[in-house]
Length: 184
View 1: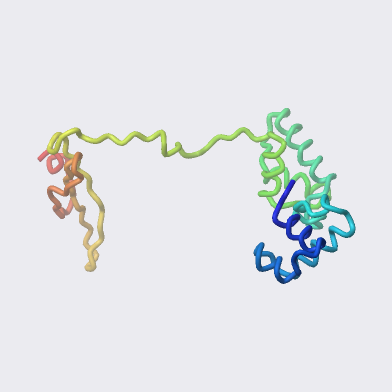
View 2: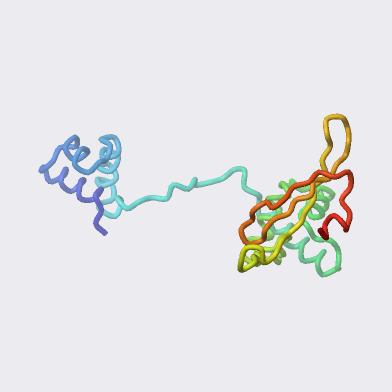
């Protein structure tokens, strides 16, 4: 595996470039080059491989005992035909005296363990097919909106649209829209 870090370190150790020259040529900070040189001296070329930036530990992570209890509760409650959502599981954990993570953490644990069947509440946008008339004046649409005037009067605004062009054909304010108004 050859990278600019390895090339820079090898050229510095061979004496063909100084740290400052290598930093300029390869776009690496001098401080990072010194860290890479230290890693090279301790472990050779393999030590120059990119390292994970993930923390070595996460003290706020949910403990294994609570995690396994969440999974067990989900399975038991589901098998018993009871509600097994994150709020219910949190309630059971609290009754058992365990540390209760947030409901979003419980949901994330259940999702990671494939214990949640996705059931979206909304239809995906791609499932909507917009109807549009093929030619202008092929189809008109009417719609009305309730509106309160400054003096407290309630009116209804009736709009007529050409379905093909979306052109507003007419707009009328009425005290109350009836079927006779919409048929015109």
